[in-house]
Image 1 (tube, each protein chain N blue to C red):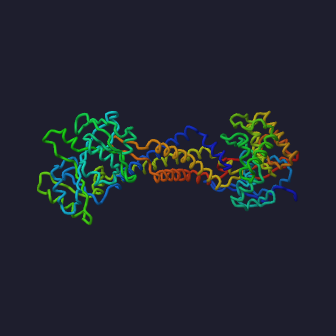
Image 2: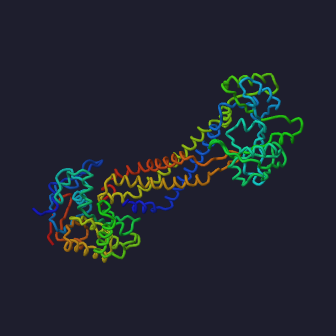
Image 3: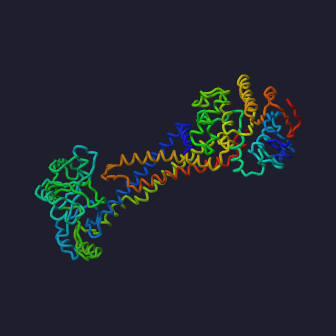
Length: 382
Length: 229
C-alpha cells in the first residue's frame, strides 16, 4: 500500500499513452462481454427448448410453408399427445413507432399453443381475453417494458411478409418460467394474419409444434410424421425442438467457435498492445530502475511494482469495458431480431479474470527485464 | 587503521571485453576512516567510479576484499547487498537521478519505503531531511520545477534520510553552476562535520576536492597519491 503513491505517479507519467492503453483494454473487454452475451443469447434459446416437443417444418427449407391441413394427420400419428399439436407463422413485421427496433412476432393457433408451451406463463384471465379478441396479442414482460405497453394498449406493426398496417391490442403479458425463456416476443392469432392473404396463400403455416405422449420415443414419432408426408407435395422434416434450434443456429456456421475465435484474437491483440506499452515504459525508466536498485530496492520489489502497474492499467481498462457492457447490453437488441441479454455474471468474472491475466502477462516480460538490469549498466556510472 | 569504516584489500576489478580482459582496478588497497571526507580524483577511465561501485556494494571485485561498516560486502549476495545499501549507504549522483513523476518529498521518501516506518514517521523524516538541505518549502515541487542546485539538494536529502554511515557521491557538482556547486559542497561539508557522515566523493574538479579532508588520486587502476588537506 505504501507504494501506491509511486504506482499512481507512474500511471501519470505518460498520460496519453496510459489513457490509450486503458481505452484499448476497455474496448477489448467490452467486445469480449458483447460476444459472451451473444453466445449466451444463442445458448439461452437452446436451453429453453424441450426434448419432449417436436418441430415439424418443410423439408426443403424453414422458409417454405406447410399446409394447415397437415395438423389433423400429425395429430393422428401414434406417440403424439392428445391435443398435442400447435402451429405458427413467423410474422416478421416492424414496430411502427421505431422501425429499427426489432422483436419476434408469431401468429399462433389459439386453442393449444400455450398449453403445449407451458413455459410461456400467461395469467388465465388474460388468456381468456386473448381468446376473445381477434386482434389480441400476448407479449413478454421484457417487450412490454421496452414498448412501454400495458394490457389494453394498442401495438401497430408494419408488415413485410404480410404487407399492410397491423393493429393489435395487448391482451396479456407473459413471463417465462425461468430466465431461459425469452420475454421479448409477441404472439397473436394466426387467423388474423391468414385471413389477410389472398385465397391461394391461405391455410399455410410455418411450423408445427407437437407434444409427445408419455413414453413416446421422439425419434420414432419424428420418423412416423415424416413418413406420413413422404409422398405429398410438402414433405416434412421433424426433429426435437432442441435439435431444431441448434440446427437453426448452425445455419450461421459454427457461431460459437467463430465468436470465441474473434474474442481470443481481440484479447491476444490487446495483450500485445499492453505488453508493448509496458516494455516502452520500462525502457524509458532504465535509469530510474537503476536508481531504485541503488537505493536498495530488491528485485522482487521492482518486479512487484512493475506487475502491479501493469495490473492496475489492465484492471482500470477492464472494469471500464465490463462496466460499459453491463450498462449498454441491458437487453440490447441487434438488427435482425437477436436480443442480447445482460452480460452473464460468469462472463463478467471471466472478463475481469482475463483482464487481470492480461495485465500480469503483459507486465511479466518488462518486470523480468527490469529485475535483470544491473545497477552499473543502468546508470553507466553511479 | 582500526576505526576505518571502509577497507579495500588488494582489490582487482577486471572487465571482459571482445578484445580480452581489462583490469580497471589493479590490487588496490584503501582505508576510509570513520568521519572522513575523502575526495577521489583521477582522469576519465582511471577506475574512480568502479571503486565507488565496489565500496557501495553495486558491483563485486574480481579478486580481493571490500569491507564496509563492519561487513565484508564482497561476499554478500545481491539480495543482501540491496538490503545493506538501503540501511547504510547514501548515494549522490551527478545528474541527481530523481524520479521525475514524484515530488521532492516523495523522492526523499523512497528509501524509507523499504523500512517499517509508518506514514507519519516517514513524513517527519522527510521533512527533517529536506529541512537540513534548506528545502522545507519545496516539498510538493516536482524535479522539473526545481533548479539544478535544488534538485541536487533533494538528492542529498534522499541520501541523508536513512541516516547512513557512509555517503558516496559521484561528481555531485559536475552538472551545477559555480554558485550551486559551492552550496552543495558547503552542505556536504556540513554533513561531514556537523552530522559526522563519512563521505567519499568522486570529482574531476580540484576546487571541489579542496573541501575534502583527504584527496586520493587514482590513475590507470592504481592509487597513486594521497594528499592530506
